[in-house]
Length: 325
Image (cartoon, rainbow, N blue to C red):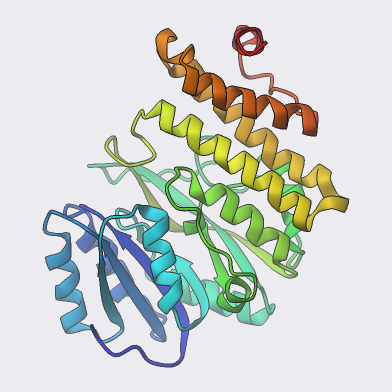
């Protein structure tokens, strides 16, 4: 492992697991960044392909890159490992199958310093794996449709972006002040999917100064075998149930006088639970474990008076509530 210096503008955490076909493009985009004051923390989460070899190549030729090898524990665990050794003034998470525009980090850092921001959010191109057909769009993409002031607090941004359908919870689309993460001991929940949702919501509640750059600085790859694209519906129901309950606990501890803002986050989780439940085969829908998740979700819905969004078929809601009576 290379020596970790004491001071950087940005620490970039890159979790790695079996991405040998994409990793070099990702790390090349970091090596070519116009911002030079950068610590790149590569966390190999037990890869069994050539990902570790590729990571070692970058460590050997660039002293800013460090490699940490760990047993497989999932994306959240790998990110938390990176947080623990980060030294930068700001912190950034990059997925190892995606990549950045060459001036992305310099653009973000300069904007964050100019406005003394706790976090700065930005947008992304999307493209299908195997193509270079980049899209920058609001629907099914990451382009902001709303207008935002230069500086707002995190909860103001959260409220405005949710109302304008502009809220993108991916941690790859936000540069954050590392001290804020340290002070509030923010970590990703390990062992669940959709871990970005809760982390981002918690981060926004603690940010006093947030900025938005509606510029595509990130290239998000869609691939059929990624964690987010796998059709593990039962695990997704489980993960979102856990996320909703942890959100509830967080609201009770930090936002009791602003519960309506927390309701948006709870509503998102519960609507996604219904969506994923509807993808399950009927036998699994009726299983004891799934019925248990739905019962817990219903308690959240009743507590926060959550409305099921109109884009879900009424039949889904009907079957759901009939099943848990």
